[in-house]
Image (cartoon, rainbow, N blue to C red; front, top):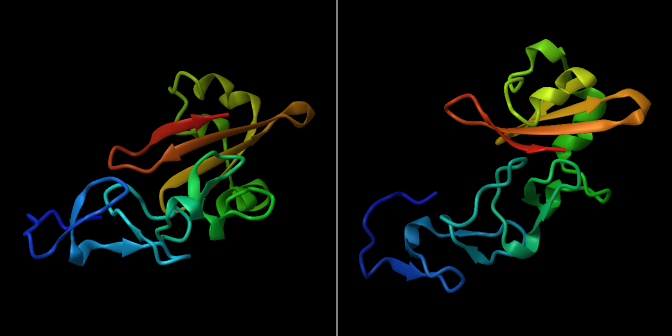
Length: 151
């Protein structure tokens, strides 16, 4: 995150990829390759908290959210999705915080839910009859959270 201070000519660095001008005190680099990345255009990995460049960022095959390549395993699952299916906290259908969501709410009572969380998301993993699976991703926020994916 940038400090929000005005950037003077002496300390301002224009980043080639996005064109943002960033104070040299706010520069961050990819945890894998040390390439400078824009602190305004990239975010910290929701699992480990480190930043990564586009080449070292990938999406989880289950929840669809982006993480650094170190936090996504060989099966394509992020650490949170690998954990939630077997070890996540059981959540009763009536206690799900997204029951009023237009896409997620109608499927809630058809699954048995487990929840795990990371630095940015609550991942809800639902197991239904005949091996059906559902995933609901809620991004943390000051308002309590926002559903960002239903699968």
